Image 1 (cartoon, rainbow, N blue to C red):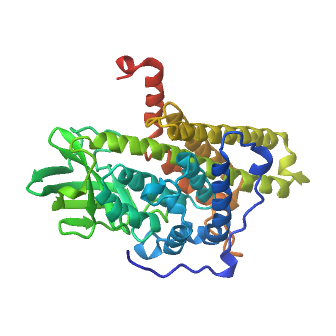
Image 2: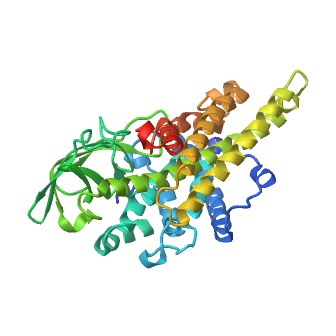
Image 3: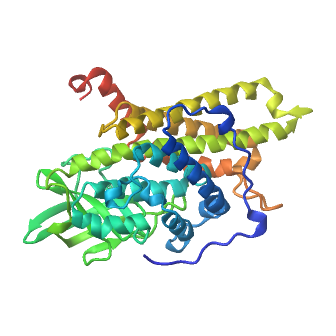
Length: 420
């Protein structure tokens, strides 16, 4: 894992954070005690480590040297990467790991959408897939993922295959040869790829799909330059190219030909994480907007004294309540042993991210011109709601577009014989 200098912030650029309203409004009757303890632990970590770095991470140009190595390593040192995993592989061994992991992602995303996304892919996608692998894969890759000495990536998406992960759509293929597989193809939008050490890779294998773990430094593998996105600047993504890369048999994850089920089960878990991220972003928007509405005056009174904004914020508080309850319910169902906790996972993902997206647009309106600026030249100040406005859109797209989530819910209603 390459090292890079940390981004330093001039004093004028320090981000102000408002008082949290969630403890006054949300009464958590669903989370077990261990999940509440994890939330408190990660909230304290995020306040100490993520909050001071959030603006620099969000504003940085998408380059390898701008990846937030300091925050990543701090998460590893604090044992945050161990939260989702059982004790037998080096994890915390929690009774409710999915609910705890979702709480982690909400707390990280409150300050930085990018940091929440990095954690999601590293732990839920790459890490959760590895738990389903052999003792060799767990020893070689998962152990390093847990302590943060290696960065993980997870690749399903291709230039022409994302929502459609069918065999017919996928071009990255693995050909069985003596001792392993020859892999050729092209993956796109792969989070962590520019800084990752390995990728969990879904390949076409004849008329089936197979999951392999591939070292990104080996011959025949090339990672492209980081993409330039409209938001989530700290979450680096890039293409990965495979040209007859040899992958040994011991790097097969699960059973040959059954990779799609591993990928779909992992992505379902990931949707719970994205729902938690959307909830964290919505809560952050809420807190910033409350402070703005209390303190910004127009026509001789605070904006919050206008009934329009009172009613709108009441609606947003209700939406955040529903979003948090939905993702917790989906996570608790997963913790009960249900591999595909639908329809709650789909409901949580689309509802929370749509809420955050709609709210971000409104939050910029509440802040007016200040919300539209990356930085006010007068004093270097910055409205975090504008950063969230740029960041949040991708949450409605990745790990299953929201239209797909609605189709999954519809299939629960009507059955496959009608929806397909």
